[in-house]
Structures are given as structure tokens and as C-alpha cells.
Length: 171
Image 1 (spheres, rainbow, N blue to C red):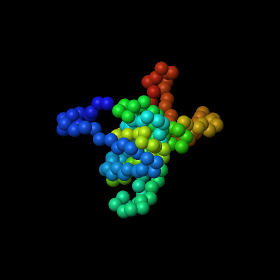
Image 2: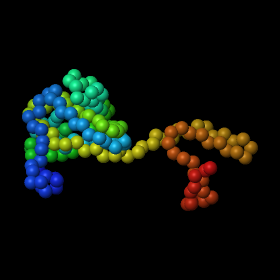
Image 3: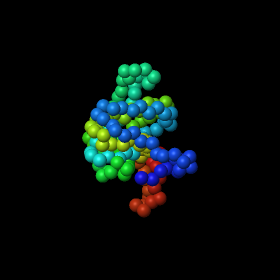
Image 4: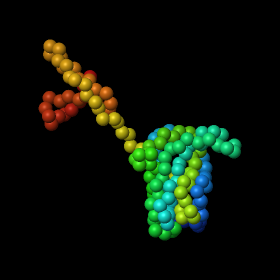
């Protein structure tokens, strides 16, 4: 594995958590800019492993914290404890999850399945792409020379005098 430049400059080794067992958990508290994020876990594993990501919803400084689930990292084997890979956070349907985060947040990693076979390195938060729902069109209506088009969901109505444009938003 290669060290990040920050660690090379400081002449330090990369830090990772090893010997993880089922139900072991780690809290990470950071101030995070308001956005929706795809979350990735950098880890190595000698067997397929599940790690859950939760948001701590109670006082992070107190025992017996409550949490809300955000998704699961389905970590595939990297074949060697020294070979790391990035695994996306997924929802219950197996889709890459987009998580809304803002301000001081405490995120918790919990080993669902592990048996000394995974090394946890760090989380990466990447702003999630904005996705708009597909539009659903209603039945168009014509009244005299006025055509009315309605829809719900994303998108905007544009017009052009020719198919090749230029296109502009309808006022």
C-alpha cells in the first residue's frame, strides 16, 4: 500500500484499525459542510465483510448513544491485509447511498460481520451528484390557440423556432 503525502511529509505510517470483531464500533466526529454526500470507506479485507455506518443522534460525549442507520459498506475481499480499496456506502436496496450531512456530525462505523479479517483506514465524503426525478406528464389540453402542458418532477419547459435551437426557457 502507498502512504498519503501528508504522512510521507511527516514521516509517519498510515493509521488503520485492525483485529475488528462483530459489533466493534468507532465514532468519528467532524464539522461537515452542508451537502449530500456519497461516502466511501477505505479498507482492506481477507474475506467479504459488512460494516454499517450510523449517525449518532444523542449526545456524543455520553455513554449509551442512540444512532440512526445511514447504510452499509459491503466490503469485498482485497486478497491481502495490505491491499486497500474504496467501498461505497449502499442503502438497503444495494444502491449507492447519498447522505445529507451538515455541521458537527458524529458518524459511527460498526462491524456487522468481521473476524480479524478487515482493516479500516478512513472515510471519504464526496458531494453527491444532484439527481432530479423524471418528469411525469399530464394530458395536454388545447383551448383555442393555447396549448397547456403540465408535469410533475424535474425539468423545465424550453422552446425554439427550429429543432436545432437555440433553445430558451419558456417564460
